Image 1 (cartoon, rainbow, N blue to C red):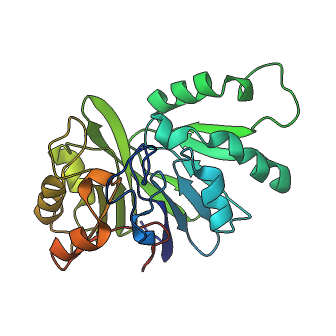
Image 2 (tube, helix red, strand yellow):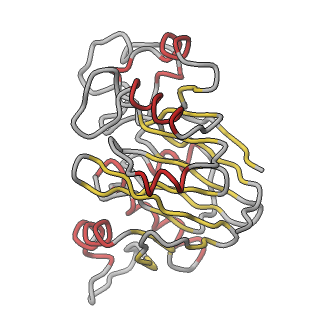
Length: 259
């Protein structure tokens, strides 16, 4: 399975409340370091001819404006929580300028939430200006967006199945606290693994920092990046200085390139 060279842009690296968090007086939320400012988690994946976004959280509109994105081919969803899909309505701007529906890829659980939350986009009575979506139901089978092959990886977010995705040598997993062995096999051989690391303390449905580091090493991936970070993890500079040389905190605006 050939994958072209890709550019990965981190549109957001924060957890559901973002960083800074509303009303919080902690040192992280008051930090002046731009690396401590985190929008809700999302990435943009680009080949020479295709551009897709993984998840459209509440910050999707601003993320697209900040990156000056004028064309988008598809949206791929990980799961149905609001911090990953609430911004889908803003796909309307791409509909307007491209004059065509947006391809949207989601599993059946997420598709159900999309049809419920954005019911007006699927209504028989359609009014002007609503999102125009071409909905594709995905499973664990590889699918293609343009020339980009996408390998779904099913992980667990407590009891909720969530999809991570492998794009060539790059694997992206958010909102997980367990990865079964058969799914780990899909990750092995990646050159880069992005994994959620919410905080240092135990959490019901997210990897802690220690658990994320252990998983990256267990999978023998040479380079790791951590995302879906809360203000509870600590200041970016301090946490980064404590990490192994091959693992880093991701940050909003970070760009990686794969071969």
